[in-house]
Amino acid sequence: MSNAILSLSGVTKAYAGKTGNVSHVLGGIDLEVAEGEFIAILGFSGAGKTTLINTIAGLIEPDDGQILLRGTPISGTGKDRGVVFQSYSLFPWLTVAQNVALAVDAVHKDRSAADRAALVKQKVELVGLGHAMDRKPAQLSGGMRQRVAVARALAMEPEILLLDEPLSALDALTRAKLQDEIERIRKEEGRTIVLVTNDADEALLLADRVAVLTPAPSARIGRIWAVDVPRPRDREAVNDDAAFQALRREIVSYLGQLNAESGTVGESAVALPNVTPIDLAALSDKGPPQAYRDAARSAVEKRYLEFYKLDKIYPTPKGPLKVVDNFNLIMNRGEFVSLIGHSGCGKSTVLTMAAGLNEISGGGIVLDNREISAAGPDKAVVFQAPSLMPWLTARQNVALGVERVYPHAGKAERRDIVDYYLDRVGLGDAKEKMAAEMSNGMRQRVGIARAFALSPRLLLLDEPFGMLDSLTRWDLQDVLVDTWNRTKVTAIMVTHDVDEAILLADRVVMMTNGPNATIGKVLTVDLPRPRDRKALLEDPKFYHYRQEVLHFLAEYDHGPGAKAA
Image 1 (cartoon, rainbow, N blue to C red):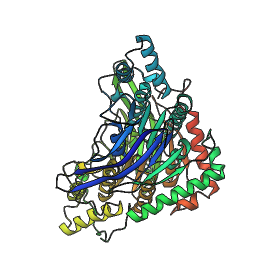
Image 2: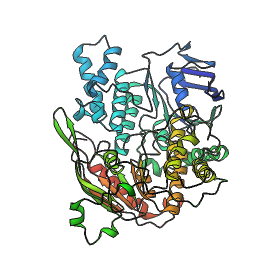
Image 3: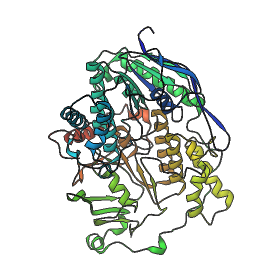
Protein backbone atom coordinates (compact mmCIF):
# COMPACT_ATOMS: atom_id res chain seq x y z
CA MET A 1 0.00 0.00 0.00
CA SER A 2 1.84 3.08 -1.28
CA ASN A 3 0.04 5.58 0.98
CA ALA A 4 0.29 3.52 4.19
CA ILE A 5 0.79 5.52 7.35
CA LEU A 6 0.96 2.37 9.48
CA SER A 7 2.47 -0.98 8.50
CA LEU A 8 2.68 -4.17 10.56
CA SER A 9 4.71 -7.09 9.25
CA GLY A 10 5.06 -10.47 10.97
CA VAL A 11 4.27 -9.05 14.43
CA THR A 12 4.34 -11.73 17.13
CA LYS A 13 3.94 -11.64 20.89
CA ALA A 14 4.00 -14.35 23.56
CA TYR A 15 3.80 -14.26 27.34
CA ALA A 16 5.34 -16.68 29.85
CA GLY A 17 3.01 -17.51 32.72
CA LYS A 18 3.91 -18.13 36.34
CA THR A 19 3.48 -21.86 35.80
CA GLY A 20 6.04 -21.83 32.99
CA ASN A 21 3.51 -22.16 30.20
CA VAL A 22 3.95 -19.86 27.19
CA SER A 23 0.87 -18.21 25.71
CA HIS A 24 1.37 -17.33 22.06
CA VAL A 25 -0.95 -14.36 21.63
CA LEU A 26 -0.07 -12.83 18.26
CA GLY A 27 1.08 -15.32 15.65
CA GLY A 28 2.27 -13.02 12.88
CA ILE A 29 0.13 -9.96 12.19
CA ASP A 30 0.38 -8.42 8.73
CA LEU A 31 -1.61 -5.24 8.23
CA GLU A 32 -1.32 -1.95 6.38
CA VAL A 33 -3.45 1.09 7.15
CA ALA A 34 -3.70 3.98 4.70
CA GLU A 35 -3.49 7.57 5.85
CA GLY A 36 -6.96 8.80 6.75
CA GLU A 37 -8.37 5.26 6.71
CA PHE A 38 -10.69 3.88 9.36
CA ILE A 39 -10.09 0.19 10.03
CA ALA A 40 -12.03 -1.86 12.57
CA ILE A 41 -10.64 -5.05 14.10
CA LEU A 42 -13.07 -7.69 15.32
CA GLY A 43 -11.91 -10.58 17.48
CA PHE A 44 -12.85 -13.02 20.19
CA SER A 45 -12.06 -12.61 23.89
CA GLY A 46 -8.43 -13.49 24.49
CA ALA A 47 -7.54 -13.30 20.78
CA GLY A 48 -5.00 -10.55 21.40
CA LYS A 49 -6.89 -7.42 20.32
CA THR A 50 -5.61 -5.37 23.26
CA THR A 51 -2.08 -6.74 22.83
CA LEU A 52 -2.19 -5.65 19.19
CA ILE A 53 -3.34 -2.13 20.11
CA ASN A 54 -0.64 -1.88 22.78
CA THR A 55 2.11 -2.84 20.32
CA ILE A 56 0.94 -0.16 17.88
CA ALA A 57 0.80 2.36 20.73
CA GLY A 58 4.37 1.46 21.70
CA LEU A 59 3.36 0.35 25.17
CA ILE A 60 4.76 -3.16 24.67
CA GLU A 61 7.45 -4.43 22.35
CA PRO A 62 6.68 -7.29 19.94
CA ASP A 63 8.87 -10.41 20.05
CA ASP A 64 9.35 -10.37 16.30
CA GLY A 65 8.29 -8.42 13.22
CA GLN A 66 8.15 -4.67 12.81
CA ILE A 67 5.73 -1.78 13.10
CA LEU A 68 6.37 1.22 10.87
CA LEU A 69 4.84 4.68 11.24
CA ARG A 70 5.36 6.63 8.03
CA GLY A 71 8.10 4.16 7.14
CA THR A 72 10.00 4.57 10.42
CA PRO A 73 10.03 1.87 13.12
CA ILE A 74 8.16 3.01 16.21
CA SER A 75 10.09 3.40 19.43
CA GLY A 76 7.91 3.66 22.50
CA THR A 77 4.88 5.88 22.86
CA GLY A 78 4.32 9.19 21.11
CA LYS A 79 1.80 12.01 20.93
CA ASP A 80 1.10 11.00 17.33
CA ARG A 81 -0.82 7.97 18.69
CA GLY A 82 -3.68 8.63 21.08
CA VAL A 83 -5.14 5.65 22.92
CA VAL A 84 -8.48 5.02 24.61
CA PHE A 85 -8.26 1.81 26.62
CA GLN A 86 -10.92 -0.78 27.29
CA SER A 87 -10.76 0.12 30.99
CA TYR A 88 -10.66 3.79 31.92
CA SER A 89 -7.67 5.07 33.92
CA LEU A 90 -8.34 8.31 35.76
CA PHE A 91 -6.74 10.15 38.67
CA PRO A 92 -9.35 9.84 41.46
CA TRP A 93 -8.32 13.07 43.21
CA LEU A 94 -8.82 15.19 40.06
CA THR A 95 -12.07 16.45 38.57
CA VAL A 96 -13.33 15.52 35.11
CA ALA A 97 -11.95 18.76 33.65
CA GLN A 98 -8.61 18.33 35.40
CA ASN A 99 -8.20 14.74 34.14
CA VAL A 100 -8.71 15.89 30.56
CA ALA A 101 -6.55 18.98 31.09
CA LEU A 102 -3.58 16.80 32.04
CA ALA A 103 -3.42 15.43 28.49
CA VAL A 104 -4.15 18.78 26.88
CA ASP A 105 -1.44 20.59 28.87
CA ALA A 106 1.12 17.88 28.10
CA VAL A 107 0.45 17.69 24.36
CA HIS A 108 -0.57 21.26 23.45
CA LYS A 109 2.08 23.29 25.29
CA ASP A 110 2.30 25.68 22.33
CA ARG A 111 -1.30 26.86 22.83
CA SER A 112 -2.44 29.58 25.20
CA ALA A 113 -4.04 28.74 28.53
CA ALA A 114 -7.38 30.04 27.25
CA ASP A 115 -7.21 27.84 24.13
CA ARG A 116 -6.32 24.80 26.21
CA ALA A 117 -9.19 25.46 28.61
CA ALA A 118 -11.59 25.86 25.67
CA LEU A 119 -10.41 22.57 24.19
CA VAL A 120 -10.99 20.77 27.50
CA LYS A 121 -14.49 22.23 27.78
CA GLN A 122 -15.33 21.33 24.18
CA LYS A 123 -14.30 17.68 24.51
CA VAL A 124 -15.95 17.19 27.89
CA GLU A 125 -19.22 18.62 26.60
CA LEU A 126 -18.88 16.51 23.47
CA VAL A 127 -19.13 13.28 25.48
CA GLY A 128 -22.14 14.57 27.43
CA LEU A 129 -20.40 15.47 30.69
CA GLY A 130 -20.68 19.25 30.62
CA HIS A 131 -22.80 19.09 33.78
CA ALA A 132 -20.10 17.02 35.56
CA MET A 133 -16.99 19.12 34.87
CA ASP A 134 -16.30 19.53 38.59
CA ARG A 135 -17.11 15.99 39.69
CA LYS A 136 -14.42 13.49 40.65
CA PRO A 137 -14.33 9.90 39.31
CA ALA A 138 -15.75 8.46 42.55
CA GLN A 139 -18.93 10.45 41.86
CA LEU A 140 -19.30 9.02 38.34
CA SER A 141 -20.67 5.74 37.04
CA GLY A 142 -18.40 3.36 35.13
CA GLY A 143 -19.82 4.53 31.83
CA MET A 144 -19.31 8.18 32.72
CA ARG A 145 -15.68 7.50 33.67
CA GLN A 146 -15.10 5.87 30.30
CA ARG A 147 -16.49 8.95 28.60
CA VAL A 148 -13.87 11.02 30.42
CA ALA A 149 -11.19 8.73 28.95
CA VAL A 150 -12.65 9.20 25.47
CA ALA A 151 -12.66 12.99 25.89
CA ARG A 152 -9.05 12.91 27.06
CA ALA A 153 -7.85 11.00 23.99
CA LEU A 154 -9.84 13.17 21.58
CA ALA A 155 -8.38 16.30 23.18
CA MET A 156 -4.86 15.16 22.24
CA GLU A 157 -5.84 15.43 18.55
CA PRO A 158 -3.43 12.64 17.52
CA GLU A 159 -2.51 11.56 13.98
CA ILE A 160 -3.63 8.00 14.69
CA LEU A 161 -6.46 7.35 17.12
CA LEU A 162 -6.27 3.88 18.68
CA LEU A 163 -9.54 2.79 20.24
CA ASP A 164 -9.58 -0.37 22.37
CA GLU A 165 -13.31 -1.01 22.80
CA PRO A 166 -13.81 2.46 24.34
CA LEU A 167 -17.59 2.46 24.01
CA SER A 168 -18.39 -0.95 25.49
CA ALA A 169 -19.48 0.44 28.88
CA LEU A 170 -21.73 3.17 27.51
CA ASP A 171 -25.49 3.25 27.07
CA ALA A 172 -26.81 2.87 23.54
CA LEU A 173 -27.56 6.53 22.84
CA THR A 174 -24.32 7.87 24.31
CA ARG A 175 -22.46 5.21 22.36
CA ALA A 176 -24.25 6.34 19.22
CA LYS A 177 -23.24 9.95 19.87
CA LEU A 178 -19.60 9.02 20.28
CA GLN A 179 -19.77 6.91 17.14
CA ASP A 180 -21.02 10.02 15.35
CA GLU A 181 -18.17 12.08 16.78
CA ILE A 182 -15.61 9.48 15.69
CA GLU A 183 -17.12 9.65 12.19
CA ARG A 184 -16.84 13.46 12.27
CA ILE A 185 -13.16 13.22 13.15
CA ARG A 186 -12.62 10.82 10.26
CA LYS A 187 -14.46 13.07 7.80
CA GLU A 188 -13.45 16.58 8.84
CA GLU A 189 -9.97 16.06 10.22
CA GLY A 190 -8.81 13.13 8.10
CA ARG A 191 -7.58 11.20 11.11
CA THR A 192 -6.41 7.62 10.77
CA ILE A 193 -8.39 5.45 13.16
CA VAL A 194 -7.84 1.88 14.34
CA LEU A 195 -10.81 0.59 16.33
CA VAL A 196 -10.96 -2.66 18.26
CA THR A 197 -14.58 -3.55 18.89
CA ASN A 198 -16.75 -6.52 19.80
CA ASP A 199 -19.70 -5.06 17.88
CA ALA A 200 -19.95 -6.06 14.23
CA ASP A 201 -22.62 -3.42 13.56
CA GLU A 202 -20.40 -0.70 15.02
CA ALA A 203 -17.53 -1.82 12.79
CA LEU A 204 -19.73 -1.78 9.68
CA LEU A 205 -21.22 1.60 10.54
CA LEU A 206 -17.86 3.34 11.01
CA ALA A 207 -15.09 1.57 9.12
CA ASP A 208 -13.67 1.60 5.61
CA ARG A 209 -12.42 -1.94 6.18
CA VAL A 210 -13.16 -4.64 8.75
CA ALA A 211 -10.43 -7.11 9.75
CA VAL A 212 -11.19 -10.24 11.77
CA LEU A 213 -8.62 -11.77 14.11
CA THR A 214 -8.59 -15.55 14.33
CA PRO A 215 -9.11 -16.96 17.86
CA ALA A 216 -6.23 -17.62 20.25
CA PRO A 217 -3.61 -18.96 20.32
CA SER A 218 -1.34 -17.28 17.77
CA ALA A 219 -3.95 -14.93 16.36
CA ARG A 220 -3.57 -13.66 12.82
CA ILE A 221 -5.66 -11.50 10.53
CA GLY A 222 -8.11 -14.03 9.14
CA ARG A 223 -9.99 -11.99 6.55
CA ILE A 224 -10.45 -8.34 5.66
CA TRP A 225 -13.59 -6.88 4.09
CA ALA A 226 -13.99 -3.52 2.37
CA VAL A 227 -17.19 -1.84 3.56
CA ASP A 228 -18.68 -0.66 0.27
CA VAL A 229 -21.67 1.05 1.84
CA PRO A 230 -22.10 4.73 0.90
CA ARG A 231 -21.47 7.39 3.52
CA PRO A 232 -23.02 8.92 5.50
CA ARG A 233 -24.30 5.70 7.06
CA ASP A 234 -27.44 6.24 9.07
CA ARG A 235 -27.66 3.54 11.75
CA GLU A 236 -31.34 2.91 11.02
CA ALA A 237 -31.32 3.33 7.24
CA VAL A 238 -28.42 0.90 6.67
CA ASN A 239 -30.56 -1.95 7.94
CA ASP A 240 -32.60 -1.65 4.75
CA ASP A 241 -29.50 -1.53 2.52
CA ALA A 242 -29.08 -4.81 0.62
CA ALA A 243 -25.29 -4.42 0.41
CA PHE A 244 -25.06 -3.81 4.15
CA GLN A 245 -27.23 -6.82 4.92
CA ALA A 246 -25.18 -9.10 2.65
CA LEU A 247 -21.87 -7.91 4.10
CA ARG A 248 -23.14 -8.28 7.64
CA ARG A 249 -24.32 -11.85 6.97
CA GLU A 250 -20.95 -12.73 5.44
CA ILE A 251 -18.92 -11.35 8.36
CA VAL A 252 -21.20 -12.84 11.03
CA SER A 253 -21.12 -16.19 9.22
CA TYR A 254 -17.31 -16.12 9.21
CA LEU A 255 -17.26 -15.24 12.90
CA GLY A 256 -19.67 -18.09 13.57
CA GLN A 257 -17.39 -20.49 11.72
CA LEU A 258 -14.38 -19.40 13.78
CA ASN A 259 -16.48 -19.62 16.93
CA ALA A 260 -17.50 -23.21 16.17
CA GLU A 261 -13.91 -24.21 15.42
CA SER A 262 -12.53 -22.68 18.61
CA GLY A 263 -15.28 -23.85 20.96
CA THR A 264 -15.79 -20.49 22.65
CA VAL A 265 -18.72 -21.88 24.65
CA GLY A 266 -19.25 -25.59 25.12
CA GLU A 267 -21.23 -28.37 26.68
CA SER A 268 -20.01 -30.22 29.74
CA ALA A 269 -19.15 -33.89 30.01
CA VAL A 270 -19.81 -33.59 33.73
CA ALA A 271 -23.36 -34.01 35.04
CA LEU A 272 -24.50 -31.35 37.47
CA PRO A 273 -24.90 -32.97 40.93
CA ASN A 274 -28.36 -32.83 42.50
CA VAL A 275 -27.35 -30.91 45.62
CA THR A 276 -28.68 -27.65 47.03
CA PRO A 277 -26.77 -24.93 48.91
CA ILE A 278 -27.17 -24.40 52.64
CA ASP A 279 -29.14 -21.39 53.88
CA LEU A 280 -26.43 -19.11 55.26
CA ALA A 281 -28.91 -16.27 55.79
CA ALA A 282 -31.23 -18.23 58.09
CA LEU A 283 -29.11 -17.66 61.18
CA SER A 284 -29.32 -13.89 60.80
CA ASP A 285 -32.97 -13.60 59.78
CA LYS A 286 -34.19 -10.13 60.72
CA GLY A 287 -37.52 -10.28 58.93
CA PRO A 288 -38.99 -7.53 56.76
CA PRO A 289 -39.09 -3.94 58.02
CA GLN A 290 -42.23 -2.77 59.84
CA ALA A 291 -43.15 -0.37 57.02
CA TYR A 292 -43.13 -3.25 54.57
CA ARG A 293 -45.29 -5.44 56.82
CA ASP A 294 -47.77 -2.61 57.30
CA ALA A 295 -48.09 -1.93 53.58
CA ALA A 296 -48.23 -5.52 52.35
CA ARG A 297 -49.47 -7.64 55.27
CA SER A 298 -51.95 -9.60 53.16
CA ALA A 299 -49.71 -10.36 50.23
CA VAL A 300 -46.21 -10.93 51.58
CA GLU A 301 -46.21 -14.55 50.38
CA LYS A 302 -46.68 -13.46 46.79
CA ARG A 303 -43.82 -10.95 46.84
CA TYR A 304 -40.53 -12.78 46.53
CA LEU A 305 -38.46 -9.63 46.00
CA GLU A 306 -39.63 -6.11 46.74
CA PHE A 307 -37.93 -2.75 46.50
CA TYR A 308 -39.97 -0.47 48.77
CA LYS A 309 -39.51 3.33 48.61
CA LEU A 310 -35.81 2.79 48.00
CA ASP A 311 -33.54 5.86 48.24
CA LYS A 312 -29.80 6.35 47.95
CA ILE A 313 -28.01 9.55 48.98
CA TYR A 314 -24.28 10.22 48.64
CA PRO A 315 -22.50 13.06 50.47
CA THR A 316 -20.68 15.51 48.19
CA PRO A 317 -18.75 18.75 48.82
CA LYS A 318 -21.82 20.64 47.59
CA GLY A 319 -24.20 18.77 49.88
CA PRO A 320 -26.20 15.52 49.75
CA LEU A 321 -26.74 14.08 46.27
CA LYS A 322 -29.83 11.90 45.93
CA VAL A 323 -28.99 9.38 43.21
CA VAL A 324 -32.01 7.05 43.54
CA ASP A 325 -35.40 8.38 44.64
CA ASN A 326 -38.47 6.33 45.61
CA PHE A 327 -37.63 3.20 43.61
CA ASN A 328 -40.54 0.74 43.93
CA LEU A 329 -40.63 -2.69 42.29
CA ILE A 330 -42.23 -6.04 43.13
CA MET A 331 -40.89 -9.25 41.56
CA ASN A 332 -42.27 -12.77 41.67
CA ARG A 333 -40.11 -15.79 42.31
CA GLY A 334 -38.34 -16.88 39.12
CA GLU A 335 -38.90 -13.60 37.30
CA PHE A 336 -36.18 -12.09 35.11
CA VAL A 337 -36.05 -8.28 34.98
CA SER A 338 -33.79 -6.14 32.80
CA LEU A 339 -32.88 -2.72 34.21
CA ILE A 340 -32.03 -0.19 31.52
CA GLY A 341 -31.25 3.53 31.38
CA HIS A 342 -28.54 6.03 30.57
CA SER A 343 -25.13 5.99 32.26
CA GLY A 344 -25.29 7.59 35.70
CA CYS A 345 -28.99 6.91 36.30
CA GLY A 346 -28.35 4.69 39.31
CA LYS A 347 -28.85 1.22 37.82
CA SER A 348 -25.71 -0.21 39.40
CA THR A 349 -26.50 1.58 42.65
CA VAL A 350 -29.85 -0.24 42.87
CA LEU A 351 -28.09 -3.52 42.09
CA THR A 352 -25.41 -3.10 44.76
CA MET A 353 -28.06 -2.22 47.37
CA ALA A 354 -29.93 -5.41 46.42
CA ALA A 355 -26.67 -7.33 46.85
CA GLY A 356 -26.18 -5.92 50.34
CA LEU A 357 -22.96 -4.21 49.26
CA ASN A 358 -24.23 -0.63 49.42
CA GLU A 359 -25.98 0.93 52.40
CA ILE A 360 -29.62 1.84 51.84
CA SER A 361 -30.43 5.49 52.62
CA GLY A 362 -34.19 5.07 52.78
CA GLY A 363 -36.85 2.41 52.29
CA GLY A 364 -35.93 -1.25 52.13
CA ILE A 365 -35.42 -4.39 50.05
CA VAL A 366 -37.01 -7.70 51.02
CA LEU A 367 -35.90 -11.02 49.52
CA ASP A 368 -37.80 -14.22 50.32
CA ASN A 369 -39.43 -12.55 53.36
CA ARG A 370 -36.08 -11.32 54.73
CA GLU A 371 -34.81 -7.76 54.72
CA ILE A 372 -31.53 -7.41 52.84
CA SER A 373 -28.96 -5.88 55.16
CA ALA A 374 -25.70 -7.62 54.24
CA ALA A 375 -23.99 -9.41 51.39
CA GLY A 376 -24.04 -13.18 51.13
CA PRO A 377 -23.82 -16.06 48.65
CA ASP A 378 -27.61 -16.22 48.43
CA LYS A 379 -27.26 -13.04 46.32
CA ALA A 380 -24.74 -13.81 43.58
CA VAL A 381 -23.32 -10.81 41.73
CA VAL A 382 -21.50 -10.55 38.41
CA PHE A 383 -20.06 -7.07 38.16
CA GLN A 384 -19.42 -4.90 35.11
CA ALA A 385 -15.69 -5.55 35.51
CA PRO A 386 -14.45 -9.02 36.53
CA SER A 387 -13.45 -9.39 40.19
CA LEU A 388 -11.25 -12.44 40.71
CA MET A 389 -8.34 -13.47 42.90
CA PRO A 390 -5.52 -12.99 40.35
CA TRP A 391 -3.22 -15.52 42.03
CA LEU A 392 -5.82 -18.31 41.79
CA THR A 393 -6.80 -20.45 38.82
CA ALA A 394 -10.24 -20.35 37.21
CA ARG A 395 -11.21 -23.53 39.06
CA GLN A 396 -9.98 -22.19 42.41
CA ASN A 397 -11.85 -18.90 41.96
CA VAL A 398 -15.15 -20.70 41.38
CA ALA A 399 -14.44 -23.25 44.11
CA LEU A 400 -14.14 -20.53 46.78
CA GLY A 401 -17.89 -19.95 46.74
CA VAL A 402 -18.87 -23.55 46.04
CA GLU A 403 -17.00 -24.85 49.09
CA ARG A 404 -18.79 -22.35 51.30
CA VAL A 405 -22.35 -22.98 50.16
CA TYR A 406 -22.02 -26.76 49.60
CA PRO A 407 -20.11 -27.90 52.74
CA HIS A 408 -22.45 -30.89 53.05
CA ALA A 409 -21.65 -32.15 49.53
CA GLY A 410 -18.82 -34.54 48.77
CA LYS A 411 -15.52 -33.31 47.38
CA ALA A 412 -16.23 -34.95 44.00
CA GLU A 413 -19.69 -33.33 43.84
CA ARG A 414 -18.26 -29.90 44.56
CA ARG A 415 -15.61 -30.40 41.88
CA ASP A 416 -18.30 -31.46 39.38
CA ILE A 417 -20.30 -28.29 40.11
CA VAL A 418 -17.22 -26.15 39.40
CA ASP A 419 -16.30 -28.07 36.25
CA TYR A 420 -19.84 -28.06 34.90
CA TYR A 421 -20.18 -24.28 34.90
CA LEU A 422 -16.64 -23.63 33.67
CA ASP A 423 -17.36 -25.97 30.77
CA ARG A 424 -20.66 -24.23 30.02
CA VAL A 425 -19.00 -20.81 29.73
CA GLY A 426 -16.32 -22.15 27.41
CA LEU A 427 -13.39 -22.46 29.81
CA GLY A 428 -13.07 -26.23 29.77
CA ASP A 429 -9.47 -25.99 28.60
CA ALA A 430 -8.55 -23.07 30.87
CA LYS A 431 -9.58 -24.37 34.30
CA GLU A 432 -6.00 -24.35 35.56
CA LYS A 433 -5.12 -21.00 34.03
CA MET A 434 -4.30 -18.22 36.48
CA ALA A 435 -6.78 -15.32 36.51
CA ALA A 436 -3.87 -12.89 36.09
CA GLU A 437 -3.02 -14.56 32.77
CA MET A 438 -6.53 -14.24 31.33
CA SER A 439 -8.07 -11.58 29.13
CA ASN A 440 -10.87 -9.43 30.56
CA GLY A 441 -13.42 -11.46 28.65
CA MET A 442 -12.13 -14.76 30.01
CA ARG A 443 -12.12 -13.38 33.55
CA GLN A 444 -15.71 -12.26 33.12
CA ARG A 445 -16.68 -15.77 32.06
CA VAL A 446 -15.13 -17.11 35.28
CA GLY A 447 -17.25 -14.59 37.19
CA ILE A 448 -20.39 -15.79 35.43
CA ALA A 449 -19.56 -19.44 36.14
CA ARG A 450 -18.93 -18.57 39.79
CA ALA A 451 -22.32 -16.87 40.13
CA PHE A 452 -24.21 -19.76 38.53
CA ALA A 453 -22.39 -22.30 40.69
CA LEU A 454 -23.73 -20.75 43.91
CA SER A 455 -27.36 -21.60 43.00
CA PRO A 456 -28.39 -18.27 44.55
CA ARG A 457 -31.83 -17.04 45.54
CA LEU A 458 -31.13 -13.86 43.59
CA LEU A 459 -28.83 -13.46 40.59
CA LEU A 460 -27.64 -9.88 40.02
CA LEU A 461 -25.86 -9.08 36.77
CA ASP A 462 -24.22 -5.71 36.15
CA GLU A 463 -23.40 -5.57 32.41
CA PRO A 464 -21.79 -9.04 32.56
CA PHE A 465 -21.35 -9.31 28.79
CA GLY A 466 -20.24 -5.74 28.09
CA MET A 467 -16.55 -6.67 27.65
CA LEU A 468 -17.12 -9.72 25.47
CA ASP A 469 -17.04 -10.03 21.71
CA SER A 470 -20.41 -10.26 19.99
CA LEU A 471 -20.55 -14.00 19.42
CA THR A 472 -19.32 -14.91 22.88
CA ARG A 473 -21.89 -12.47 24.30
CA TRP A 474 -24.64 -14.12 22.28
CA ASP A 475 -23.51 -17.57 23.39
CA LEU A 476 -23.37 -16.56 27.05
CA GLN A 477 -26.80 -14.99 26.79
CA ASP A 478 -28.00 -18.39 25.62
CA VAL A 479 -26.14 -20.07 28.50
CA LEU A 480 -27.81 -17.65 30.92
CA VAL A 481 -31.24 -18.34 29.44
CA ASP A 482 -30.60 -22.10 29.56
CA THR A 483 -29.57 -21.89 33.22
CA TRP A 484 -32.53 -19.67 34.05
CA ASN A 485 -34.93 -22.09 32.34
CA ARG A 486 -33.50 -24.91 34.49
CA THR A 487 -33.29 -23.12 37.83
CA LYS A 488 -35.87 -20.32 37.49
CA VAL A 489 -33.58 -18.21 39.65
CA THR A 490 -34.90 -14.71 40.25
CA ALA A 491 -32.64 -12.39 38.28
CA ILE A 492 -32.01 -8.70 37.64
CA MET A 493 -29.70 -7.63 34.85
CA VAL A 494 -28.38 -4.14 34.30
CA THR A 495 -27.74 -3.60 30.61
CA HIS A 496 -27.34 -0.88 28.00
CA ASP A 497 -28.23 -3.27 25.17
CA VAL A 498 -31.89 -2.90 24.15
CA ASP A 499 -31.95 -6.18 22.21
CA GLU A 500 -30.37 -8.03 25.16
CA ALA A 501 -32.87 -6.53 27.60
CA ILE A 502 -35.83 -7.76 25.55
CA LEU A 503 -34.34 -11.16 24.71
CA LEU A 504 -33.71 -12.14 28.31
CA ALA A 505 -36.39 -10.48 30.40
CA ASP A 506 -39.98 -10.96 31.48
CA ARG A 507 -40.08 -7.22 32.12
CA VAL A 508 -37.87 -4.31 31.11
CA VAL A 509 -37.65 -1.64 33.81
CA MET A 510 -36.60 1.76 32.43
CA MET A 511 -34.98 4.34 34.72
CA THR A 512 -35.07 8.10 34.36
CA ASN A 513 -31.84 10.11 34.39
CA GLY A 514 -30.18 10.94 37.69
CA PRO A 515 -29.92 12.57 40.07
CA ASN A 516 -33.21 11.62 41.74
CA ALA A 517 -33.53 8.72 39.30
CA THR A 518 -36.55 6.49 39.59
CA ILE A 519 -38.57 4.05 37.49
CA GLY A 520 -39.97 5.82 34.45
CA LYS A 521 -41.67 2.93 32.69
CA VAL A 522 -42.08 -0.83 32.96
CA LEU A 523 -42.51 -2.91 29.80
CA THR A 524 -43.92 -6.44 30.00
CA VAL A 525 -42.28 -8.67 27.38
CA ASP A 526 -45.02 -11.01 26.16
CA LEU A 527 -42.85 -13.33 24.08
CA PRO A 528 -42.95 -17.12 24.45
CA ARG A 529 -40.15 -19.03 26.18
CA PRO A 530 -37.79 -20.61 25.38
CA ARG A 531 -36.77 -17.78 23.06
CA ASP A 532 -34.89 -18.44 19.89
CA ARG A 533 -32.77 -15.49 18.79
CA LYS A 534 -33.39 -15.92 15.05
CA ALA A 535 -37.13 -16.40 15.47
CA LEU A 536 -37.28 -13.41 17.79
CA LEU A 537 -35.79 -11.10 15.17
CA GLU A 538 -38.64 -12.04 12.83
CA ASP A 539 -41.37 -11.41 15.40
CA PRO A 540 -43.21 -8.06 14.92
CA LYS A 541 -43.70 -7.84 18.71
CA PHE A 542 -39.95 -7.71 19.19
CA TYR A 543 -39.61 -4.60 17.05
CA HIS A 544 -42.59 -3.02 18.80
CA TYR A 545 -40.95 -3.58 22.21
CA ARG A 546 -37.63 -2.36 20.87
CA GLN A 547 -39.21 0.87 19.64
CA GLU A 548 -40.85 1.48 23.03
CA VAL A 549 -37.54 1.18 24.87
CA LEU A 550 -35.64 3.28 22.33
CA HIS A 551 -38.32 5.97 22.46
CA PHE A 552 -38.10 6.13 26.25
CA LEU A 553 -34.30 6.41 26.11
CA ALA A 554 -34.57 9.15 23.50
CA GLU A 555 -36.83 11.14 25.83
CA TYR A 556 -34.07 11.06 28.43
CA ASP A 557 -31.21 11.55 25.99
CA HIS A 558 -28.15 13.35 27.37
CA GLY A 559 -27.85 16.80 25.89
CA PRO A 560 -27.80 20.51 26.70
CA GLY A 561 -31.47 20.52 27.61
CA ALA A 562 -31.60 17.11 29.23
CA LYS A 563 -31.70 16.36 32.88
CA ALA A 564 -28.27 15.97 34.49
CA ALA A 565 -26.91 12.46 34.52
